Each structure stands twice: as C-alpha cells, then as structure tokens.
Amino acid sequence: MTDEKKKLCHEKDTAGIPKTRIAKALDISRISVYRELKKVTK
Image (cartoon, rainbow, N blue to C red; front, side, top):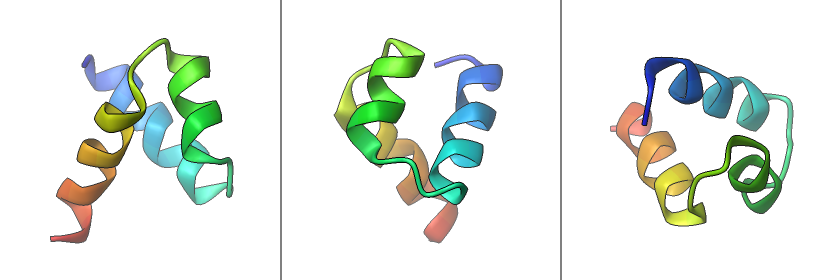
C-alpha cells in the first residue's frame, strides 16, 4: 500500500467512514484496511 493510501485510510477512518467503503474507495482489500489501522493502535 502506498503512503498516500495509508494516509487516506486513516483520514477516512477518523471521519467515521465504514471500513468496507474505505477499502472500495482506495481499491484495496478490507483486510488491508484493518491491518493498516491496527498498526497505529499498537
């Protein structure tokens, strides 16, 4: 995943957008969204 997609992933999650919609908008898997967001919470 590119740095830009990682940034957008976090921004969209903070805005309250559902993980499935984030994945579709960024053209990545839902699992990738969860993995990326999990990295920051650790």
